[in-house]
Length: 176
Image 1: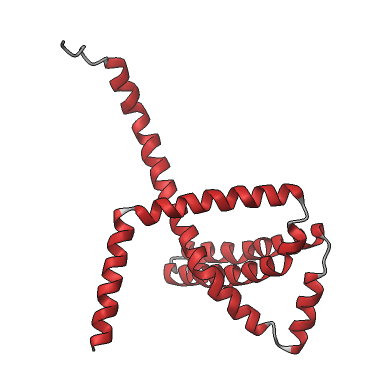
Image 2 (image 1 turned 90 degrees about the vertical axis):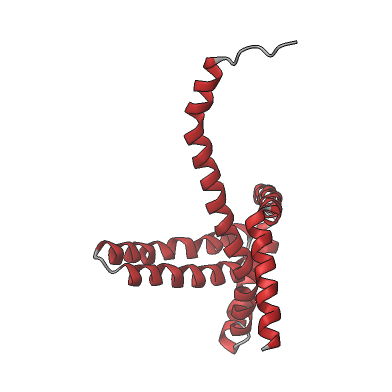
């Protein structure tokens, strides 16, 4: 039995879809990197702000935040995103002025501070936010999607190679 000749229409269709597949793959990897940064930074930064939150005035503020009703908690949880917009615009202005290093530093610092604040606020407002059925549904979808994405990234060869290199460097450092 012989194979039928390839359909030229399928070839051109596949070729036309190639840029879209490449962009989708690139976007997926970029998104995975952002999520990994959030994963690595979320807990340590949240713990750091929890430590700061033990200060007397901030302890009072955190107790007030924990008692917020669901929609007030949602508004407070979204507030850092809005507050960081002018900071990000400032970073873009620096970059447009040729001060790429300054702009990049502003973005990195804003990302660190923003992640810390959002992580702490989410910890404080989560019980109230989960009372909103739509939020709980979206959160569960997000969590399931993120878990699947992280499993895919962790199974990839660059991730496994990075872990091997990290272990080797750690062993060499301990020998020194």
